[in-house]
Every structure is written in C-alpha cells, then in structure tokens.
Image: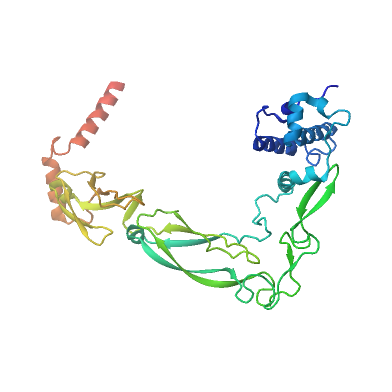
Length: 376
C-alpha cells in the first residue's frame, strides 16, 4: 500500500513554514495520541504516521530530499525516519504541551529556569460616588508573601547556597523513554529548579518568601466606574526561591448615593416639587458632587417625569477631557393632610377647571368614551 503524502497527512501546504508544521503536528498528535484513544489501533497507527511525517518535514535536509524524491529518498537505507534521542529533543516542547494538557497542568507559573512566579492577588476597594467624581489616593494594607530578607529569596540558610541538582545536573529536566519515542520532563528531585537545598532558611523554611502585611498607595483616577480594575504590576505574591512577583489587581465598587444615580458619565437626580410650584413654575437649587449648588428653573405647567438637563455637571469621563450631564427628574407631589379650607379651595379649582387647564386628563377620558362608544 502506498504511503500517504507527508504534507497531506499534516494538512499543510508544501510551502508551510516551520511554525506552521509544528502547530499542525501538535493539533493532530493530541487528537490521535494513544493515551487519548485507548485500544484504538487505527489512532495509534495514525499517530505513528504523523510522527514520521513531522520528523522528515521538520528537518531541512530530509525535507529537501523528500520534496525532490518523495518516499523513495528514504528507502533502501536512505536515512529513513527513526525515533532517536535527537528527534525527541527537538520536539520536547511539543510533547511537554501535549502531556501537560492531558494531565491538566497547562498554564503553570514555572519559568524555564525553574523559578515559580508568584500568584496574582485581588483586593476589593469600595469608594463613594464623590471619590469617584474627584479621584483619590487610597492607602491599602495587603497581607501577602514577600521575598525573605534573611536569605534574599534563595531559600538557603544564610551563609550557605543551593546546590546543583545531582539528578538533572542543573538542567531542571530529565529525559525518559516512553514507548517508541523519548520525552523530557520536569526533574522530580528539584521540581525543575535545577538546584536543591540541603540546609533551608529558618525564616522562610526554604520557600524564599514570608507572609507580611504591606502598605501600598494606589491612585484612583477621577471618573472610574463600578467594576473598574486597576493593576499594580509586581505587587502581588513573591515568587518561590527568587521567582518574579505576581500582580495585584484592585477591583473598585462604588457605594450607592443617597439621591444621585449614575448611568455612565451622566447623573440623575429625582426631585419632588409641590403641586403649586409645578403649576406656576419656580426655582430650585440642587447640590452637585463638586460641593456647589446648581440653580434649576421649573417651567410653568411642569408634569411628573419631565427631565431638565444641565450640561457638564455629571461625572468626568475617564482618560478624557469630557464630562457628562446632570438630569433633574421632576416628580409632582400630591398634597396630603389637607385642612378644610384647602379642600374647599381645591374643590373650587376643580369646578372652575377646563380642558385647557388639564388637557391630558381631558384628552384621555375623551378617548376612553370614544373607544367604548365605537365598540357598541
């Protein structure tokens, strides 16, 4: 049976780059790996074919020979594909990703030199709407892990040093044969650090970091919204044995305001006015977040729900020289606990009112009558 074309096996063109070959092989190898397809002989055979194709096409000399002579270039002792240590070493990063994904170890914080990056931290900070309007400098007390001063993060007792790992020779990785190919894995003796500690630091127990409460200052810019995230690079947990620190993420929440509601950069204020002021018109003063008061003119005949817009008195827009607007939402208050004289005056007003005085109610009831009259 004729062998399949190597390029077709990997699903790439004959002009594919080394990166494209590697990416295509990795996806297919993960799909057909025997560990993901136990008992599936077809998948195992496919996996071997993929390995063979990638070994040839990832080697410039072998690829050139294959492009010129096809499979015949490797027949009769012509340097056919094998699965020796050189090939395994060149693909170590691929299989490390492959086995890492299958065992759920993807996305770890260990660097190539074995040092572990510290974890990112989260801090929840609640501020008032006034503070969001003006901005502020907040002082935070954050319990976190910091580099051990006694050993300077090495993890070894002062006066001593970590030793080169005897298992991996300081490489942090060991090579092992698995089936028909070899792979490199993290050294089990040193955990990938390439060093071991015989006499650990008493202050940190060999971790190279200790837990302390730190005081930090963070600038909260004017105009921040609820849910805004501020990142402080390198202010998270210290890494193990001298590894880089993680980041600190500050999540902002804004307390509800007693009379202002926010929608983006705009502010809304619900203001009750008397029936007389709504009918005859009048003036109001409304406090705003900068500590001043704004004069608002209520037009004659104002109804509940009317919005009066005051430009530029809302929230500042983050990272922009703009400001939202303030909207005054009028609510006409119905009088309560009337005296006898007040009741008499209102009844007199009702008797003398006309369609022109209360056009909306007159129009509504006219439409209701017309509707039912038409239904008959």
